[in-house]
Length: 100
Image 1: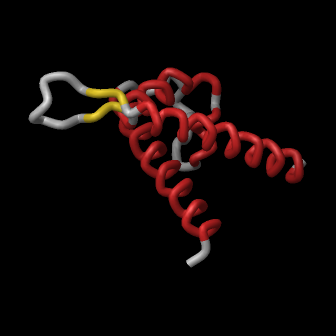
Image 2 (image 1 turned 180 degrees about the vertical axis):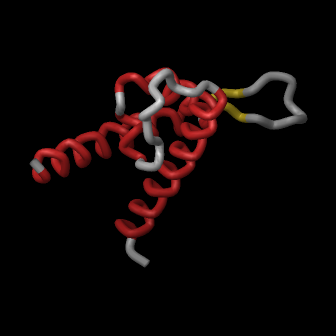
């Protein structure tokens, strides 16, 4: 398997796990609009959902080991998610512009 395919799969797994955590955060704190739909992963990029994205990133990037007394920060994962969201945001923007 090529390195590019492994990298793409890893990025998609990270994005999927972030989206699952994002949906869990939103279900705990429902949005104020009745018409908001969270079935699409592009809802991660909606400005009104920034608090939920921030919480989801913090949940994903903390080490939740029961044996440890304090949760450690996974700084490398946080940086990887930053660049992944940046790249994915550009792709979503280009797809949206093409559709118009």
